[in-house]
Length: 201
Image (cartoon, rainbow, N blue to C red; front, side):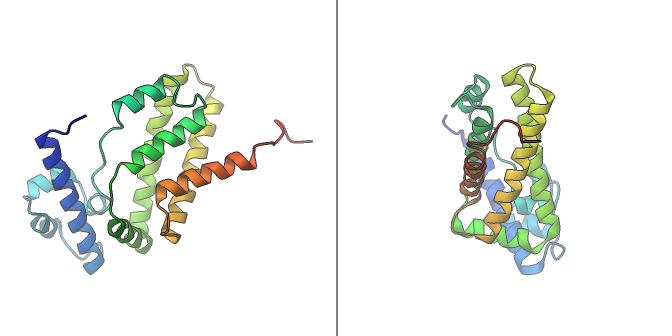
């Protein structure tokens, strides 16, 4: 899908806001700069700034990305790409997270900020949980009258895998969050590969 001029302009502005917020937070701390200073750094008006982000925390973490590619979403809703619910959830999440197009220096900067301020870590976690909750609604649409227990298992397992991947990506910069998420899921699959359906009593 070809990006329009207005979409490209919005993406550039969002990126400028995030980069400025991260630089200011590194230099002065999250509480050490104002939204007016952030607007001036990004070259936008205060009103435009608040049209993109409601707070400094949101600015540092970045403007939420676009919705997933409609073709990917349609494939998921139709039961693809593999037909296995949990695998397809992880694949779709990896595609969504992998579309951020962050450079290595930006990833390192964001990692440093999240590690240095508990508010940023908490906000990032809440974003990820919120995304998974949206996916739970999509799962219900895909699977029909899904068993509530199954939906709960998928949601809780996905959140825990995301938490693990986030922690690992903060500690190990050699691979990114998306790769850690895939590795975490692969580890669970391997661990349960030959497990009995029910434990012995």
